[in-house]
Amino acid sequence: MLRDRFGGSPAEAFDDLNRSLPVDRALWREDLEGSRAHVRMLAAQGILTDAEGTQLLDGLLYLSLGLV
Figure (cartoon, rainbow, N blue to C red):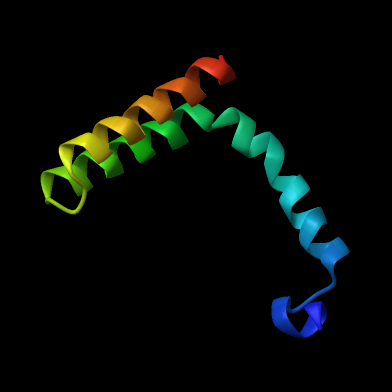
């Protein structure tokens, strides 16, 4: 069933994920900055309320402090 749905075995999917971890670790700052920019855009467009935007930005800041 998983092979049909994802095009491979679960072990292959986890291997792919694990191979990306060094890149993810190297680019976490850029990834969080992109997420902050996306939240600001969503709030500016009225898709998020100011309170929702602030809450998400606070959460991203909290994450970044834990990754330093």
